Length: 411
Image 1 (tube, rainbow, N blue to C red):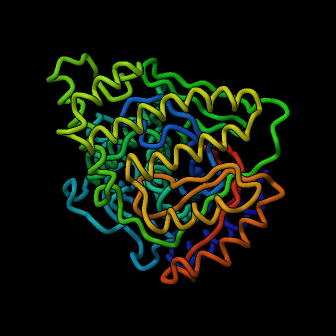
Image 2 (image 1 turned 30 degrees about the horizontal axis):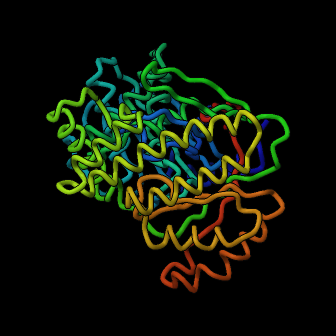
């Protein structure tokens, strides 16, 4: 059954298709979600376990296959780009397209062919989304949507969902040039309404975890700062990832048998590293300190979720945010302005920046009776703190949803 949100998006797409001259008669719609990470932010490329949910800000793509071997795509969010059209297998060189959303469509074609899939059919498609730019994984949602769609119209079955994750990451890493990990793709592809998704990277397994009975009624709130994040490849995220990889190399050279920073779990080992490297590499040790502490918080958070103790989940979410700000130093002025406002509202259980950092969105866990108070506080205080974005910010109240859904019979 379609929600009002879905119906509005479909009507929007119908109008866009008419404007663009794209025939969608008989088309299906694939809807891909955003995500909200509860832990560990920036843990994926450091090897930690992950936990999060799918959230109801989406990308909708109405599509149908064609036998012409042509990709014809039109985005309602970037109408100035017009219809993006190219032949399957005929895409620009990797890394050469910098500022167009079409680089994700090119990248999907590039990766699928590189992985040996026989892609001959193209698609006619119109895309529309309401995922804020930065923090809720718009690029991962689009990449997954396009990959799943191209596989479907070409009659290709991929039994291993993690292969889909790997390819979606490769679109960003190898074609776009963005050094993302796999947190976003995993939390969207596997998201299940009513459940948290727990990913164990060592075993590469997914466990669906229901919120325990008796939990206080709460909402997930995304605090879109109105800023534009230019992409992970141009952000502090890239620097932080390189720092963590550098530290792993230093530790390996010093005799530590590790593959990633998440392998440092014992307090005595952490303290030894701290004493050995704090003078020579103070910033790198700070990055490790965040990952070490965040891993410990992760298991407390997971137990609290299972037990229905959403207050503790919120307090750990807040502590993680302070660590991201003070130890990992991945946040930004506007992100912290939103956090400062949220922290002062009674009934906000926890708040922190989301995603890659610098710009984009912060998030909060909020008791249901305090959502309006949070909105009012943001409306009053954020324009004062960040006047350049007084007309651009937004507050999104989200629910937990399935990551991927397909609708038929709408065109």
